[in-house]
Structures are given as structure tokens and as C-alpha cells.
Length: 62
Ligand SMILES: [Zn+2]
Image: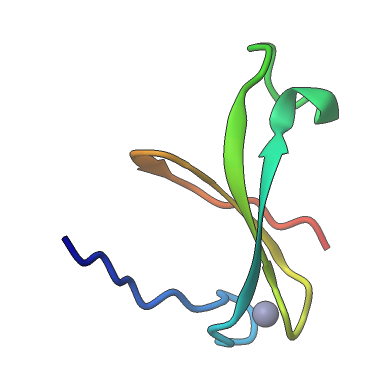
């Protein structure tokens, strides 16, 4: 299975990101403990996007 999605930064249209795992609970955004998401940080403008499996969303944390 090949899953390739062209992902672009909504701010600067750059398409290279640093990937990381984050636990959102430590930021106080969610009450669920150990809520994990993938964090992508734009290498150009440092815009941060958070992705939950199966339910994509992003947050801008500049
Ligand atoms: Zn960007």
C-alpha cells in the first residue's frame, strides 16, 4: 500500500515538514490523557500542524 499525500503549509505553501509525536494533554488542549497526535512543523515558516489519525485537523501555533 502506498499512501502519499501532497501536503502543503497553509501559510507559505512549502511542502517539507519536521515530523514529531506530541501528547496534547500536556498543553491543556484536551482533557483526555495521553491523547497523541502527529505534529508537523513547516521547515520554512515553523507553522505547526497537528494531525489526529483518521481525523485531520491543524492548529496554528506560531
Ligand atoms: Zn510554512
